[in-house]
Image 1 (cartoon, one colour):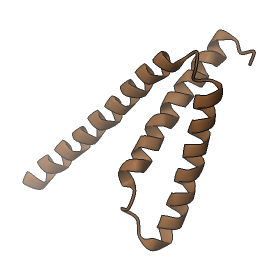
Image 2 (tube, rainbow, N blue to C red; image 1 turned 135 degrees about the vertical axis):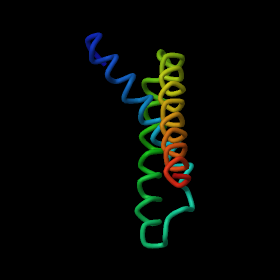
Image 3 (cartoon, rainbow, N blue to C red; image 1 turned 135 degrees about the horizontal axis):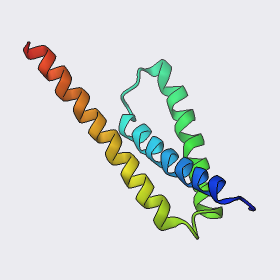
Image 4 (cartoon, one colour; image 1 turned 180 degrees about the vertical axis):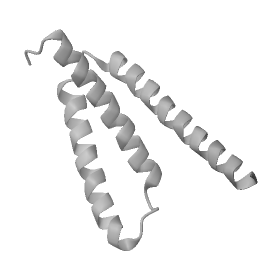
Length: 94
């Protein structure tokens, strides 16, 4: 794969974002009504296949960077979630 530096960085961020997305999908597993559950399961299967393909073909040389980006993105997601929950709690108490 011949990518310039900017494309490599974009791909690393995309992969880490995808891993965080996949983790959020996993966190929602079982939370959907039957009608949405089929679509959710299909999305999760595609997500898992994409992640496995990336891990197999591209992750070898970039594993540490992707894991660091994934951790940072996931931490950001949880910080945002906590902020929303805190704001909602403040609104309920007002």
